[in-house]
Amino acid sequence: MSADPRQRRAARHARPAAEVAAPAPRKKPITVERITDAALEVVATEGYDALTIRRVAAVLGTGPSSLYAHIVNKDDLDDLLIGRLYSEVVLPAPDPAAWREQLVGVYTQIRDLYLEYPGVSRAALAMVPTHLETLRVGEGILAILLAGGVEPRTAGWARDALSLYVSAYALEQSLVRQRRRHQDQEWVLSHEELLDRFTALPAEEFPQTRRHAAELISGTGPDRFEFALGQLINNLRPASG
Image 1 (tube, rainbow, N blue to C red):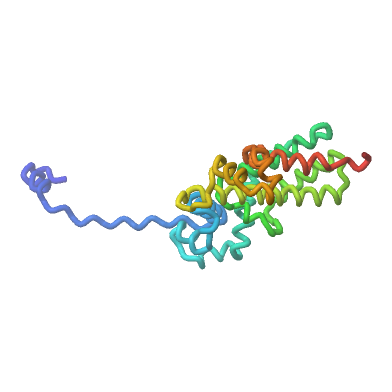
Image 2 (image 1 turned 180 degrees about the vertical axis):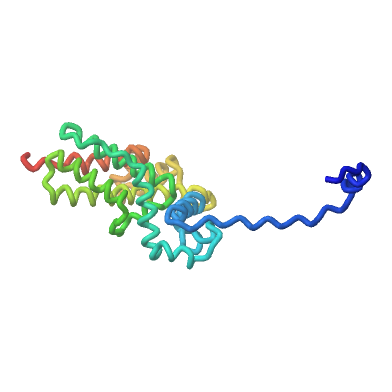
């Protein structure tokens, strides 16, 4: 810096030299983890129906071709989604004295995870899992069934049936929530309206529906979930029994 006070004073009022443009920040690399994060974001904010490779790429600020370097297709994306959700499932150590309660606990966790992301349970339907977390949960469920003395083939079929029910239940609940957001649709009925319609049916054609209308529509979604799960699980018997 100049020792001359006049030069220093002049320098303060001089036109600043053009700043060198900072290099543009490098984009984060596309990874399987980031793809899964973006896919879950799409499902959480827009629903599973909005999930496409192109939509996920848009969230990541890139093109679909960038994703295909890491995933094969939409089915592969579904596998990643379910694997990410299942990574949060806590599996108990199989207990022969409490295996039925343990099954309910595990499947309740899965139901709640599905319900956080509208319609995502559709990704679990008709899918052959390859993700290690999905396989981990399947292994844990099988271990609980076997600890209860259920014969291996029955255990395998029961696991499939229970998983199918939980996926279908969560999907239906997601559809119900979606439809309730569109109150202009006349067929979206409240509990009271449904009861009124059932009890107003012609008695000669619908005697049982009229008579038992209150029972037919009773209970909450969780009540019915626990009932159906209990019916499936409680009818499983140890092989020796």
